[in-house]
Length: 111
Image 1 (cartoon, rainbow, N blue to C red):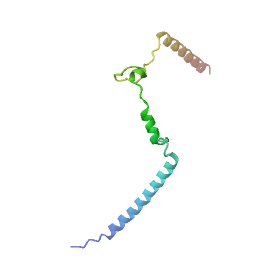
Image 2: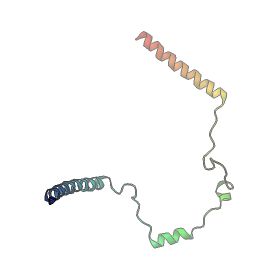
Image 3: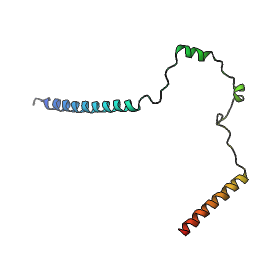
Image 4: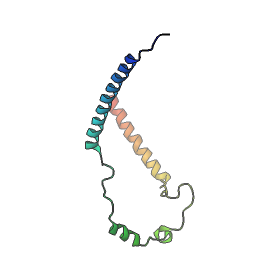
């Protein structure tokens, strides 16, 4: 049986470790640079003080009946009602759009 020499493997592993450490250092530098520019954008408000929390807790909440109706049910309970357009309004909009298209078409033929 021959004896196993692991010094070459250890040397390769150390080289790989050094390469990965350099890469990690580069990534850390990039993160710190980006966080200096773009960090803390979403949470710009500070934390509430104890007095502010107590004050907010003492304010009574409006009941749903006073806030704009009773309890809402259904899939789109919080969504406002969609506005519908009358048939006459749709016809006026369609006619105006047809005029715009005709004007563009005439300009293309002339030009």
